[in-house]
Image (cartoon, rainbow, N blue to C red; front, side, top):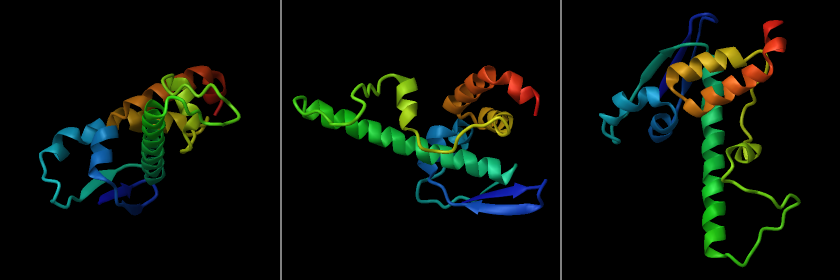
Length: 147
């Protein structure tokens, strides 16, 4: 259980989240959670913007789903080399990270949230998201600076 305390909005939100996903994607938790047994229940309290933390959790869920789909796709094609998936776009090369991100269906970065997401992702060590935020930020710096 993760308790997010949003001091700015004077609210508290609780999230139930898989420890394995937390450790896999948010390296900030890696050291402290690996020392605790999988059978132990954990309560974590975090002081941050609740909507930003919820955005990050949704991002991780979507990323995990995309990675699972990629692994199933790769496994299926390696077993059935003579079978091809019939889709409109036939160049589905999942080895290219930019093409893999086309299949990501999670929350999107925008001009208003990218800075907050970047700061939180950097603090929590969500490396892939930090890279995406930096790319988005550099491509849209003129518009972001006007907000």
